[in-house]
Every structure is written in C-alpha cells, then in structure tokens.
Picture: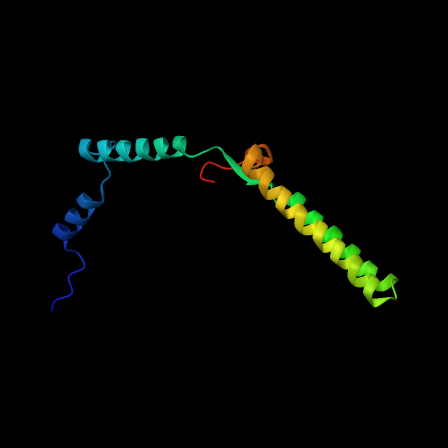
Amino acid sequence: MKDNRFDTKTDRIIQASMKLADEPAGELNRKLKEALYRKEKAMQNQPAMCRLSLWYLPMVFNLILFGMLAVAARMMIGNVYLFYFAAGICLYIGLSGVLLTVVGVKRANLKEDMTIHVEKRGAWA
C-alpha cells in the first residue's frame, strides 16, 4: 500500500465530519427537552424530605433500662431466689413497656407523630 500523507480528499471529509453546528437538529433538540422535562417531573414527584421514624425508641430505652436493673440486681442481691424475683419483675416491666408501645402505636397513630423529617441535600439526593 502506498503511504499517502497528503490525501486532501480524505482530509476534507474528516474536517467536514468534525464541524459542529451552532444548534442541534430539531429532532435531537426535542428529544433532549423531553428527557429534561421527564427528569424534572420525576424530581418534583419525589418527596423533598427524608422521614425517620422514632416510634420504637421508648420501647428500646425501656428494655435497656430494666435490663440494666436486672443486671444490677444480680450484682447487689446475694440471695438467689430474691434475685430471680427482682430480675423477673424487671423483665416483666420491660415486656409490658414493649406491649404498651405497640398498643400505643396501633391505637394513637404514634408512628406519624414520632417522625423526624430530614431535608435532603443536593439536586439528585
């Protein structure tokens, strides 16, 4: 094959294909606008805030508190039967706190009242 570095016809074809138009073609412009409007509508439909429900926190704190009281009863009380009695009371109160929390959530709609709304950051967050 011949090495022709000065092929002007090929150079003109390459330069013509590399030229940029000032405006995109009408069909391309319409498709881009359509995609942009679709994304904008999807962003408007998304909630602007993130919801963090905290309804379970009283139940968890109650279980932790009475669990620690049961452990403290184990360390302080030397009598085995008295320790089992105190630990049983602590566990009973902890489980009744769980029951009260579940009933309160069902009856009083506490999930909505105990929700923190965190604002999302950024355009695509």
